[in-house]
Length: 142
Image (cartoon, rainbow, N blue to C red; front, side):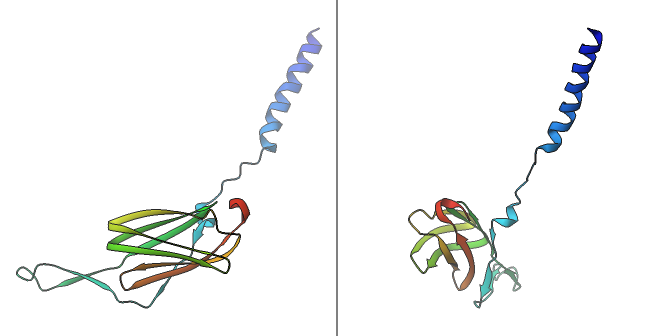
C-alpha cells in the first residue's frame, strides 16, 4: 500500500513539473501591430512666447503613432493643436475621418466594411502629412 501511494505521488509530482513546460506562453509584442509612419514634406510648427517677454521661438514637432489591431486602427497624436484628418485608402475601398487635438489626441477608426488587402494611411496635421501602409486581413486577421 505504501509503495502504491509513493508511486502515485511520484507520478503526480513529475507530471506537475512537466505539464507547465509544455504550455507555450507567447507574448505578442505591440510593435508587430505598429504602423510605420513617415513624414511627407511640410514645415515645422513654431510655438512662440509673447513678444513682450521674449523673441525666441521653440519648435515643436508633432508625434504621431498608429496601430492596427484586428479591425481597428488607433491613432495617437501629441504636441499638436488643431484638426487631424485621417484617410485610409486601398484598392477596394476607403475611409476618412477627422478629430480635434488639444496638445494630445486619440482616435480609433473601425475598418468594418473594408475588404482584406493593403491600405495606405495618411494623417494630415495642418501642413504636416504622415503616411504609412498596413495589411488588413479578413475578419480582423492578418
